[in-house]
Length: 338
Image (cartoon, rainbow, N blue to C red; front, side, top):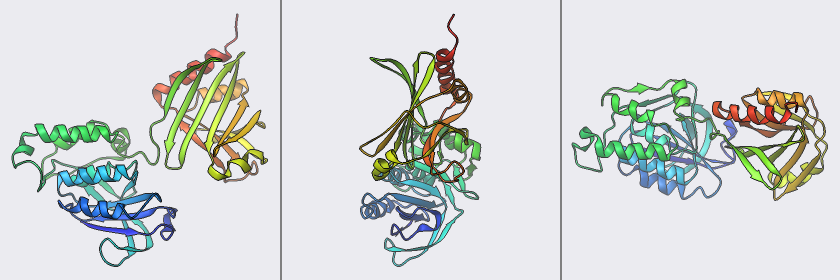
């Protein structure tokens, strides 16, 4: 496997400018993790976008690469990043956008190490009963018990559905099962830059509130709803960094982000910047609360002008089980009292 590293700020064709670009190309050999580790040691805290294009190779080396990528909090992509480069492992100047690639067998496990994972259009992610040149003695893979347990643990730690293991062990050693887009999403093999949302009911001295939170490649979005005398109060928390103080005193057009569309909000009751986090408070109308209860995602957008296409903000997904929780909380709050 060839390991190439491109410098941050010089690979802006796809908007990834602040991150290092690492390309992993070819068969995964037993020594590949050492080369990947050495390359990661050079990236510091700038972030790493890793492009994998490999038909497979050594099972244990693939999982070791995945663990290294997770420790570095890298993002992974199936594809090829073409760039002008010098020697293997050296830094070069990225000169082209990513192209489709493949990630099979041991590569499919290495790919799971990404915190945020993407399979680009035209790229393929496939599994089969993997082989290896290192690790336990020959025959262990055929019995399946020891290695399957190790793969199952690895898949679970990476936050991927165990159904992937079923597909892996069912496929013959020389056949590749290509996962569909629907399967990739259902098993959380890809998350397209968004970790699963977390919705919970929290209790404080002032009563009970509903909180939604989601980590994405752009930061963490957090939103909370409090019921006060049949009115829904909404608190949003946006990671604005060094822009937070200026944003707190600026004039903004505020909107709810609902299922990709926008619903205008009035000026907030309060806006506070605290250690890079912008905290905004609104009192919602019954109609706005009802729109949230019927939506699959909710967030907060801030625009310089109402008709401006650009905005600052975030959204939190409301998946199936959470949608019942959100709907019940809002409906119970705004329901007429007899």
